[in-house]
Image (cartoon, rainbow over all chains, first blue to last red; front, side):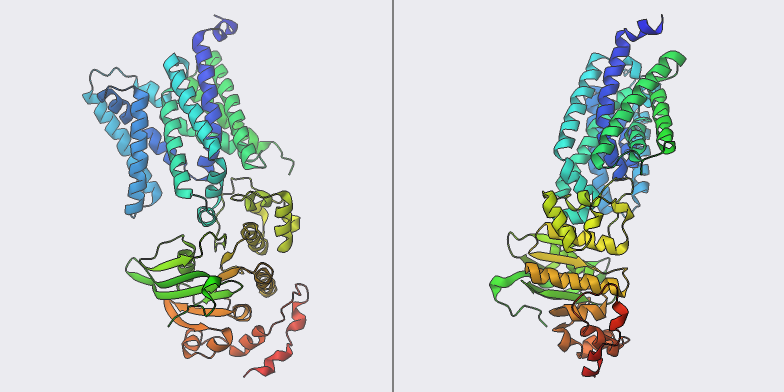
Length: 268
Length: 262
């Protein structure tokens, strides 16, 4: 089968459509994760994905819904512990991330009837997207993007300086809670496609690559999405030609774009 | 000891009563009273760690006191210049964008507040390139853009040299005079503060003394708190000229007013 024929098969179209939705939403969401120094927070939520699949299975729900429930619960638990425990944020996140992953692995052994491809879950399966996955990623991603645009201005003010924004009347607590829900939603809707270990990369690498090329927050968000789309197409092409794992190829491609963004001269 | 304003109640913008605030077994603020009226600059002075920033944040509503009450005039606009800002260098942000983050403002309004603080030329500069003095002026511009009736300034002249401090305090007085807002200021720049304030509240976890700068300079509580400060120097600054000479500050070091004070 040559490349032209390959491009016409449904699994490639599904991968491109799903990847496009992911790149569109992870660009603007990712710049906030970079600005708010929340990379490890995203990673922690992603690590709970496996536990989410098990919870979904036990409750008779779809895996994505199970992941969403566990992500939201973990975000709430984290907020609660942060207000009570005198632990550094990264210690607390590491504790929760690896506990959630370990619990997921333990739970998996008890669920003998759950047929499950662990490798695909850890590293993603961009080339095995079905219609239901597309619905989740376009539905969940689309809603998240619309909400993010709606809260853009107050979220930006709260991100630059929380106390100053609050003094000026921005409802920062509410806005930041909504943002946390968005991160949990996007991770839950994309984790099956991109994988537990690679979703954080798609949130932060395109954003980091866009930083040096942008002169305003909005420009950085849009360019992060564009870089994400380029990484997606490049990674997919590499995957089809070189027969490399798709999601890992996309992340590698994003990293190359990041390196490129550091090299090319800017007008400033 | 009470710090309630003698002004008429309708002019009162802010009143805090019996504010107590404890953290980790330490009493940061103990039964502190505070009041502020229109066209008034009240300055909190005190050593580092005396609770000035905490009191400012409580007055502003950013922190809740353990006991005591804060009353702010209803529906008034608030401006705030925080002590420290920690903007992630990964965010591309111009001054224009920074000062309009939580305000809807026309270009003309933005230009006018930047002109008021003397930094019009910075409008399209990246905030990551600003010097300390430029930052303080940009922060003041952002506060002014909200047309505040009540302005909270936390160490507005920090990190500036003497002429820069003079210029900032002159600017603060001008803001009070032109807008009529009430200003609550926290500072440990004793000398300049004394010349700029209508009332000084000397804080070291509790209110040591309060009153007009003239009166409290002779208060034993004040003198014991700032005993090491050269009062001669203070007298000089107190009568420092009210107009700006950013480029010829040294010419005023032979101020004749010094002899008028003991």
